[in-house]
Image (cartoon, rainbow, N blue to C red; front, side):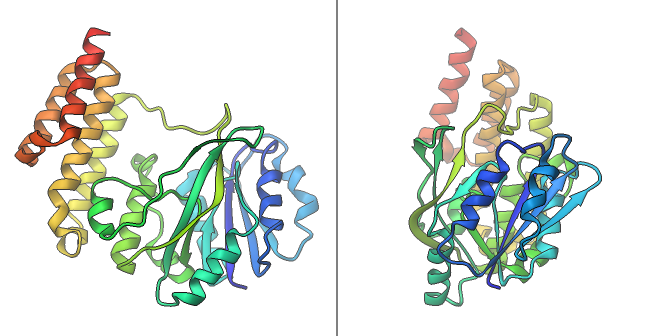
Length: 299
């Protein structure tokens, strides 16, 4: 078995079969599906029962909602395939996704972390917009400036995913993906890229979106920044981009404050970004955040 497709879910009975069927329709068939249910209160488990009779589909049922990080790690630990890929229970793979991923591996057997493009679709299946496409020359620099890797369409050697793991610290919820990708790159040293759009994120009214109040965002990003810069990540390949990392996260908090009309906080983090790297004053992103603050002052 080559791929383990890990599908964490919570109350997605009306959507999860579309997700599972998109995997079952793959042109490449050497895979397993691991569904990790987080104590759904709808009829998700009932919907899944007919599919669990198939040899390549298994279920991990948590007695309580363990959140995404725990669910993903549970999937990693249960995986029998050589590579794992994460798929939310309201997203889909296009039919050649796994075949193209396998072909990429056979052509690049020393690359253990790679991804393809994705797009956004509505409930009618119509493409609403494309996800960002990135074939970067310096992934360490690019990641220090912001997370450009989505969870969907990412393939990771199983033993590496099991070793790196998603951080289960509750305060990181909403930023655990960025943290995971940064540590994966540090471990793998390179990110492979398949320049094909092979999967889609479904936009729908119930889609989970992190909408924390400002204090929680500030705590989360502050924790994340301190965690990263005090780890060994910035002793290695990330080291030249430490200022970029700090500045971009300060600007993120600045923007979160601005749109909530927390003007004093917004200016405070804009100033912190300047102190971290005075040259940011000449960057478009600095001017952009300043204008966002002004926009919400006069709104």
